[in-house]
Length: 402
Image 1 (cartoon, rainbow, N blue to C red):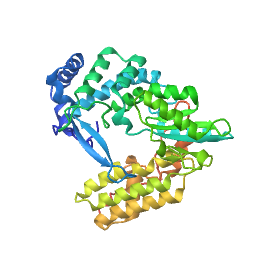
Image 2: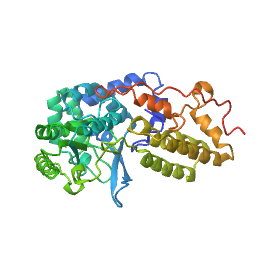
Image 3: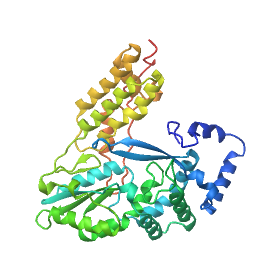
Image 4: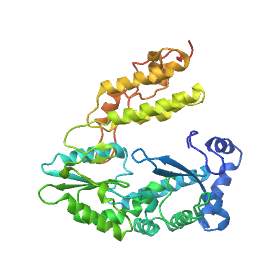
């Protein structure tokens, strides 16, 4: 688990556990503890292990609305990663083909699938908006999904106890949904909505879903978008889910339909403008923050740049000039900390570690390499080649050594 991960309610974070795990006998003790918890997960004395710290993140598109993120105890997050590894393959076998959240490179696969679907003459797209999806998925549907997938009884019973006993602050219990931020939340949500997706597929076979981001493709002459939304809304009620019909979009109505943040279109379009705008905003916040230069560099590397450099790996069209301008902006921001050269910062970030740099995939400097990887994507399997290092960049000294 990365050191940048936030700790749970106890305050014991990844850095603490990395030290404790070095203590002789500690790995064996933890393994024994995990086994005991799995075997008797409903015991009330384990309840504190299921506590989480609630963080409310503002939603970009809606003022006054927040996305609740549950930050559990670090040691339990590690345990849940282990459990996810044990059930993931089995869970995926039980999911409908249209559910792609656990495919390798799912983001790129989903955008490519949507583009490919739109190439057939007469095809239209309808997006469904599931209201408060992760927080409202019924526990009964999650349990049904686990049973249909054949999740081992021991793990199934532990997950039920974890969901039932989970709590935070003044909330003694949470009656439905899955805690966003937990390693198990995505697979549990997908299992919980699987029966709903199956019912939609029976009516409209061409569907793709990344968790609650759902798009249905249909023939313009055979079906009407309003009818599709009506059917999807009625079906959702059977599973105690709510479709916001007013927020559903249709290309048949000349509305913009998006999937995974990218426009669904017959044309090859880019997400550069949106991705760069968000990354630039985040860069400004980091540079204004009252933190050390080292912390600013770290946040720029692990938080800001990834907000932009994913785009050339997934978008159908990719404008090099826009990404080079973003690289320059990053260099100027970092150079402003120490009155150094922006170009040297770009070189230092982009140069592979073997060439004295950090090996960060700046979207402009690595654009060719990112697009080469994009072109190797196999939509069926989700596999693609890795991003090759930009060996043309060399940094003999760090920019701060002026």
